Length: 139
Image 1 (tube, helix red, strand yellow):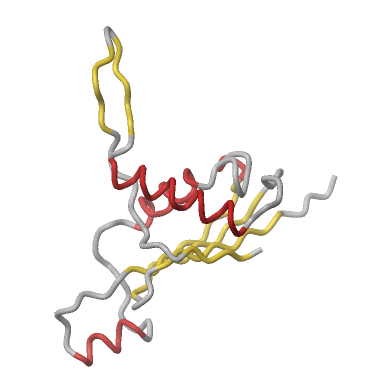
Image 2 (cartoon, rainbow, N blue to C red):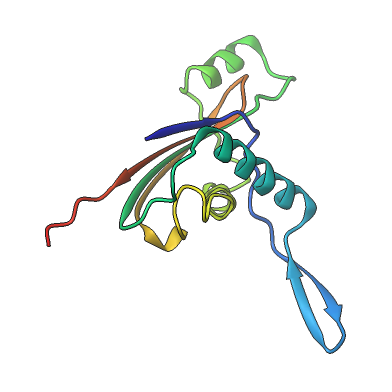
């Protein structure tokens, strides 16, 4: 199954903390929280099945915007994929926020994922593309 979410990918940031009486409550920064909620809404619109069970293989492609102040040559190199993002945010932080945002929707829990392939690209249309494959088990 392949899904495309027309949303700018957002990296998982360190959780914030606040005191609650004698305890501490951890929460996502607003930017991450909004991303996860928007991703969940888009997923509910595109995927109307029950969450997948079992072992999963997930392929993720994160397309981030291209800066405006680039030469035409550099812009073309980025659009063709010859130059890929080797700047922050890190790919693993994109993975974390995206997988967490889809828990309970595409899969019961992201601990079911046994293999991940993730890539970062530049694009004029920021988006997140996800392919999910159920791993066949020989019982």
